[in-house]
Structure formats: structure tokens, C-alpha cells
Amino acid sequence: MDGNGRWAKARGLPRMMGHRAGVEALKTTLRLCSDWGIGALTAYAFSTENWSRPGDEVNFLMTLFERVLQRELEALESEQVRIRFLGDLEVLPAGLQELIADATERTAGNTGIHFNVCTNYGGRRELVLAAQKLAQRAVRGELDPTLIDENIFAAELFTAGEEDPDLLIRTSGERRISNFLLWQLAYAEIHVTDVFWPDFDEVTFTQALVDYQSRCRRFGGLEPIAVNHLGS
Ligand code: FPP
Image (cartoon, rainbow, N blue to C red; front, top):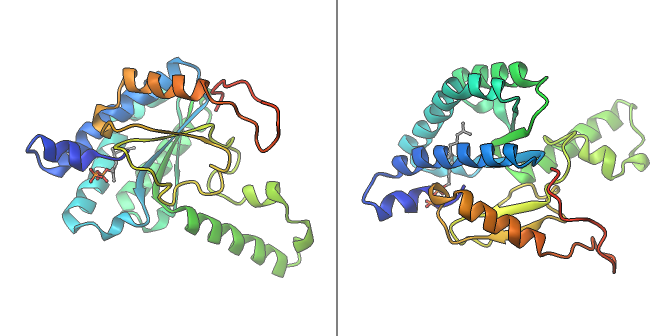
């Protein structure tokens, strides 16, 4: 969700107003995904590197997450959204952790779109944690290291049980992966738009999907092997 700060700056507003507007863009995108039958939406809300921002911005974001969760939980429940937070959640403020646990539990049985919010998430950290968990199982004699394959490894990631994303959308013209879903994005198509995240809407989302539909996905082979239908 890049470009919140620059969106605000361009309007002579404080950066925090950009994050507030970013929440509205996220709600719109989630609703569009849900309406259009997309199986999962994963948003990068706060990275392990974002702690290096000024304290007042970090505090604002943590409070914003809490307020949004409190305000939107009923709607998420009634719209059958299953929400999960991916990342190292133990270091988040205690009140936010409680809200996350409550929202996760209350929506766990929902049958609609999977909405994943990466919070204190880092792709490298996720891979290191997975390696640690597998090593611990091996030390306990529960796992033969020679049997570790991609499926066993993926089952230790925060995204366990999720399909890999088909499409990565990067806003504000950035052309980097920025430590996001390093394992899971192996074969994702990448769409870059210059639009700042708060301006991301039905038109720009449709452009991203049309771009995606034009891709020929061969997964390293010679023949296209997938219809470009966004099932997840
Ligand atoms: C990146 O823009 C955006 C963020 C670090 C925060 C995004 C968070 C939200 C929109 C809130 C979502 C809330 C919930 C509960 C899911 P930036 O600050 O890097 O913008 P810049 O690149 O223009 O400085």
C-alpha cells in the first residue's frame, strides 16, 4: 500500500492523513476482490523495517489498526470475510494483539474471501522462523531432514494453507519486492502502477487485472499452463 505519505504531502496534509485515506482504498479493494470472486487478498500493512519510522507515525499506525479492526469487525463477519494477520505478532501492543486474536477467531469459520494483513511482517524473518521450526522438529527426532521438501517448508510459513498469490500489485511506481512474501511470490505476475495507494480504486484495479489477463504464464515450461483466472 505504497504512497500514503506522498499522497498526503501532495495535498499539504500530514502523512497520517494518507494512512487514513489508505484504509478507505483497502476497504474498496477488499470489497471489489470479494465481489469479483477473488479467493484471497494479502495487504502489506506494516513491515519489520517500518519500526525505524518516527515514533509518532508508528504509534499512529498501531492505533489506526486497532480502530479499523474495532470499527470494521462486524462488517467483515457479516460479509463472510476470513481475516488473518501474518507476521511476528507478539511484539505488537497488547490491545492490538487482543483485537487480532478476537477478529481471527470470530471470522475463522467464514466461507468468503481470505483477507490477510501482513503486520510486523518480513519475508526473510518468515523464512528464518520456518527454518528454526523445522530444525527444532529435527532435533526432537520428529522430522527426518532429508524429507524436507517444498510442501513441508511452506507449511511452516505464516501463509500455511494459503495458495501462492497470482498477482502482486505495487503502487506509487516502486519496482521492488521490499521483503514481501519472498517465498510465495516465486511465480506471481507483477503489476506496477504509478498511482499512490489512497487513489487506488475500481479503475486502477481493473487495469491491473486486465494487465494480468494479458500475461502468458508458463511456470518455467514452454506451454501456458494456467488460465489467468484469479482464484486466489
Ligand atoms: C505505506 O505508505 C503504507 C503503510 C506503511 C501503512 C499502510 C497501512 C494502512 C493503510 C492501514 C491498514 C489497516 C488495517 C487494519 C489493515 P508509505 O507511508 O510508505 O507512503 P510513502 O511511500 O509515500 O511515504
